[in-house]
Length: 215
Image (cartoon, rainbow, N blue to C red; front, side, top):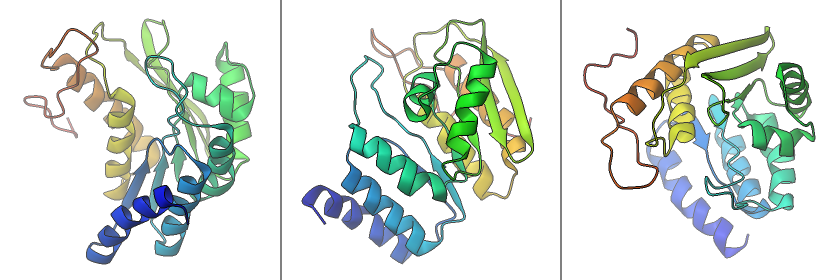
């Protein structure tokens, strides 16, 4: 185990020793060694819900993950995943399928499903469409979930917020198809209630006033 992978293990292992973990959501895992270590820990602890958010590139366009790590994600983590949540650019890199329309998105999702994950949600929040449409493919087939796009520059962390919400909702025993629209409503409300901090892409408000997840 290299030093970086060991540092990740040292952070995660005490949590499994102290708590009963119902769900795990992964984010940026920059090296193959770190991916292998995270997968090993999840496998050893039989985590019920695993949401893999394959963060491959920064908002400003910089690659965050090398090709070996991408291959490790597909071979080590996808078979353990309840859900994989790439955006369109990430789905293209992971599947090798160019995505310009829904049919191509479905084809890319099918490629990733064959890598072992139980479901794929290709998120569309970073497109230019007037709707934010996420495409889900699971054992029940393909379903699109759309919400009206909110015009705001305070969208830093929307992907992480969506996937964390999904992990929490599924950990509570909700189905994936029940959880997706609930998580999307939460993210939309969090954007609307953003505190408008700073001149760049500001953060969401993760505690939007009056919001109830079941409403």
